[in-house]
Image 1: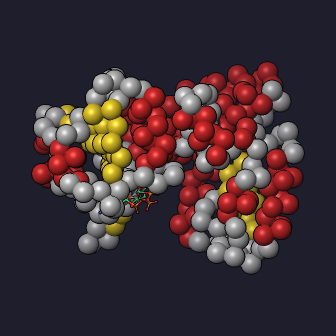
Image 2 (image 1 turned 45 degrees about the horizontal axis):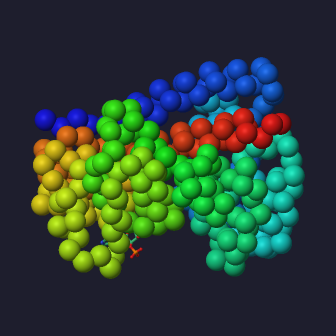
Length: 282
Ligand code: NAP
């Protein structure tokens, strides 16, 4: 019988724990500040930003949101990031992606100091992750690790297969699992024999971005299946990368969509901001 890993419940427990820790921090050292920059009117980005502000309110982090118009010049976005980088009341800086196409996102992100990079996207944080050093870890894979830990799923020596090699999910996920002593295979659109590779997985992590991509014949009996995907099915209903209904009976553990990895991502952003404040010395 499979067990569902309830990301919503775990996220709310973690946020409560964090709220207490932040309360203690504020008493001793003052407020923790997270700056969020949103350029343009992309509706999905606006929803993500709103959810981040709500999470900040829930745990006691002071959020400052900078809404910039779509046509904002590169120089103006860069100046804002630079001024936030110099502001010691701000412990984390988050630039909501994607930025409008006329803005060079890489140049903007490079201006965020490593200590304030709460998304964990900078080359330095990724390098530290590869070296298994303390750093800000990309929030989604960090949340997946917390989900595995919450169920005491030991990954040591296990065969982990990750579908997807993006900078924000697949690659950092592979490093986290490798650091935890799993044997890791990363698959992508050019991978040959994908089904066979997936069938060897004790832990299968799907981050492809294709509705119900992982079917029952790709899953080993009693595998742990983690679904990172957020898609719409043929009826417009939110679904993951895993064909949940047909796959679940083969799993020991499985995460649902919605209510799985999604709520963990923003929670880990709150943890990264708290840890950035702790490390800042301000
Ligand atoms: P992405 O940047 O589009 O990367 C998708 C990856 O899947 C790429 O590496 C791609 O391979 C691979 N892929 C595509 N088709 C494939 C196929 N047929 N077989 C094997 N691999 C294939 O996506 P992402 O940003 O990592 O996001 C993945 C999914 O997770 C999306 O649904 C996204 O919405 C969701 N997501 C959820 C959260 C959350 O909080 N729950 C956070 C982030 C993302 P190539 O590299 O060869 O192109």
